[in-house]
Amino acid sequence: MESAVFNLIEDIDQSTTNWKIKARVIRMWTSVSSENGSVKGYNVILLDDDNNHVHAFSYPNIWNGFNTPVIEGGVYVFDQFSVKAAVGNLKPVQTDIYIRFSQYTTVTAAEDDGMIPAYKFEFLDLGDLFAEASKYQPQQQPEFAIDVIGVIEDFEPLTKLDTKFGMRDVVKFRICDSSNQHKVSVWGDLAVFANNIYTKGFQSPIGTLPSSKLYLDLDDESVTDMRMRLKEEGYLSKREKYLKAAKSEFKRIYTTFSVVKVDEDVACWFYSCNKCQQEVERLDRRFRCNNFTRIIPVAPKRFRIMVLAEDDTFSCNIMLMDRAARRIVGTSAAKTYNDFEKAPEEVLHQVLKDLVGKEVTVIIQLNKANVTEDSTIFDANDIFDTTTQSPSHLNLHIY
Image (cartoon, rainbow, N blue to C red; front, side):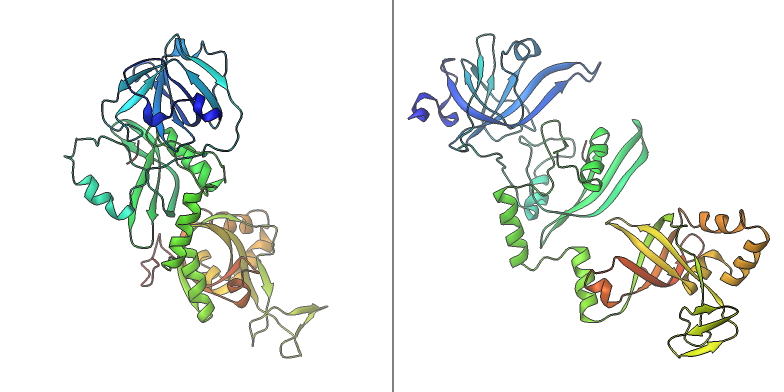
């Protein structure tokens, strides 16, 4: 059989350089000089069909001399290399050896017969992280890097913080399972990549340590098993909890968000019935209320402003109904409309523009369409401007 031609990773040692393995490259990264940013070496994690993996390293002149380009995910035959003792801290895999490619090493692309897995992880349960961290002094680093798996909650979009290294990009989130949660911060260029993969749906992994990666919704058995475990243990995400509560009873929900955009293509006010407050139909100089089937001579103007709202977890469209809109705008629709007739180009546009960037707490009245997810537009019936008021009801390092 073909497997008899190759050595298994678990069998290689420092006794010789006459090794030949067939393996998949499951991770790649470069070692970079902290002084000038030049590449000092190339690193790969190799995985064989017996599910054993090992770290391998090559200096740039050796790597660039390979006749076959090496890419992440590819399967190759590696022949003639040295085996060294693994030293140092934060080693990428839990083995006591690593491979050093030399001028005698040859690399040949091999057929991917599907016998070698696409990934391998050495997971530590989230509940054991604190105990693991407690083994080390504040400035001490562990011997091995750690793999974890969980659900990302409370993702905070990319922002900049002033640090001792200057202004740096950072994203923050919590990683959770059904019993545990830990705060995570990702800094620098890695924060930009994290923000892209989470908010824009990029399906490429990103790094934390140079050797580590972050995967979202990975097509892997470990992720499937994790989802089944969370389901069995009754884990619900923040959004699932929100919808579950709503399905039991249509009710008011308090939530805080920032106004990202105002949809000026949607009319920001309407004529209403002075009895039911609902929109009426205009008939020449009079109005018809279809709820009470009556004609009314005068119909008050009421706000109805569509905004794009965003919090730490997701964004959605929220309709600021009249009471909510009046509280944040600081005036009525009728007053705004009268001023609008006097100076249409300035007044209304400025009123809507002033909403953008405000952080507000709203009371959302859920309806059946929200609960069944037929509608992603939520009606906000009341609102508090948290920049000027203190509402009594509020919802709620990695380098």
